[in-house]
Image (cartoon, rainbow over all chains, first blue to last red; front, side, top):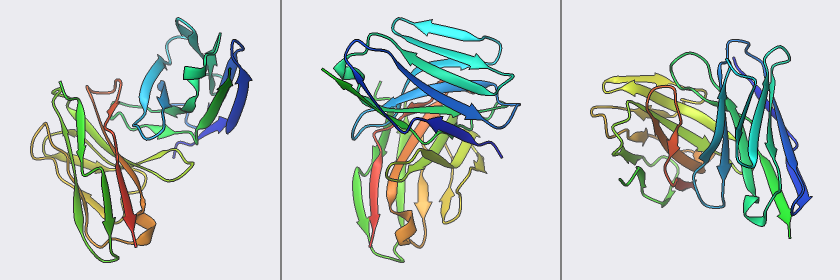
Length: 112
Length: 111
């Protein structure tokens, strides 16, 4: 079945720096790749997603890139702020079932 | 809209007890899901449903059952609780294969 690997498990940056989180997936049929942010004690919340027919998507300080050939996708956060501190999860799915396979998560700490 | 609601927020069970985790959504989403999240880990799909009367297994279905009699509700049943089922349970819903909206979670401890 599908497997999603996420790195790094923890990431600490200074406020204003950029942060990059990377994920690889195993099933070449996967076609939907969302990123979720989870704050302590809350459920995950979608921050950006990308489908396999595009290579990059941006939303203000957040961007996602997808390399279908290499089967990896990355989350880029620029000008990080303390409120960006959270756990970030990548995920992948295929077909129309919506079944998401999640990565293990990255704990991002932004130091003021 | 309340979005996705889950009850209870917390529960402690003894080994062998049973319980039902409730999930409801008011967004008229056709797809609903149950995940579990163990400490420091990602979410694992337990069961999902693409519409009322239709359910299917996810990655970790053993020890759980679901039903989907209405569009709004998707309860998760634990029949014989085991310590391995100690986890945080999240329900989610979506309109087809699009953004999934998550509930606040139920923290379950089995002693």
